Image: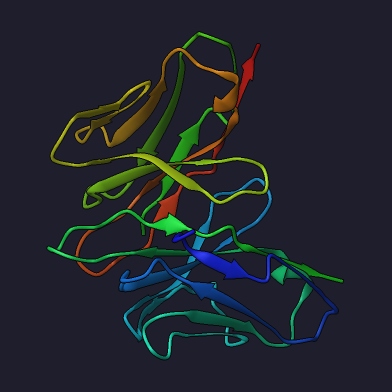
Length: 116
Length: 113
C-alpha cells in the first residue's frame, strides 16, 4: 500500500500523559498536513509542512502541541499533558506541490485518541 | 478566514435515484474545491474535485458544479447504489500560501435499497 500511513490507529491514555503520533506520507509528496476531526464534524486544519519546514499553524494548535518533519519525509505530532478535549481523530494528509497549483490532498486512516 | 457551509446534514434517497449535496463558501479567493467520501472508521477519500476555471466536472456517476458568482458548488450522484452510503464532505482552499482545506460539516447519505 503506497498511501498515507498513520500509527498507531488507536491510542488510549490517561489525562496528563504525553502522546506521539506518526505519519508516513505518500512517497515524493513534499507537503504534509495534520488535521483534527471530532465526531460529526469535518476535519479541522492544524498545521502543514513543505518538505521539512513548518509553514503554517492553526490557532487550534496550542503550545501543548508540537509537530516535526525532520527529514522532510515522515512527521510526528506530539501532544503534551493531554486533556479531555484532545480526544479526537488526528488525520494526516499529503500532497505534491508543483506548478503553483493546489494539488489533491490524500488522507491516512488517522489515529483515534481517547483520553480517560 | 474561509467558511464553508454544507446542506443537508442528512440525506436519504432510494437506490437508483439521484442525490445532491450543496456547499457555499465565503472567500471569493478560494479556487479549488474537492469532495471527500468518508465511510465509518475510514479515511476521507477524494472522489472528485473542481477548480475555479471550470463550471462543471463529471466522473461516471459523480459530477460537481461550481458557480463562482454565487460562491456555491454542488455534488451530484446519479443512479445511487448502496455503497454510496457514507458521509460526504465538501472543502475549499485558497491559492498561494494558505494551504489549508476548510471543510463543510458533512452530509450523511443513506441509500435505501
